[in-house]
Image 1 (cartoon, rainbow, N blue to C red):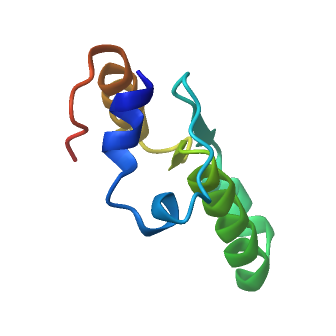
Image 2 (cartoon, rainbow, N blue to C red):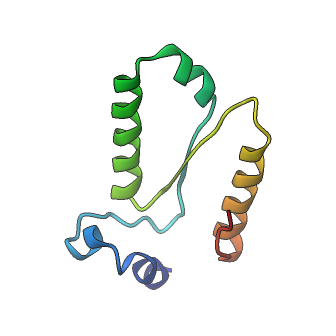
Length: 93
């Protein structure tokens, strides 16, 4: 399992500098209700929070998915993400 993770992230620049802490259990960060968040905060605050979440996800080798309650597409994305972790399938867009 560790070897699979290392091969997945081997080409990444931060992995070569040992900045990524790989987890054996696949972790997915799912940010729901993004539409409510987008309407409530200033653009700078949204940008900073999203960048912080991206940094945390990348530093730990996690997936990060933003979604909206009003859209149907996120449920399909979650399903593909879970299938990719369970059966080691590539995520298709």
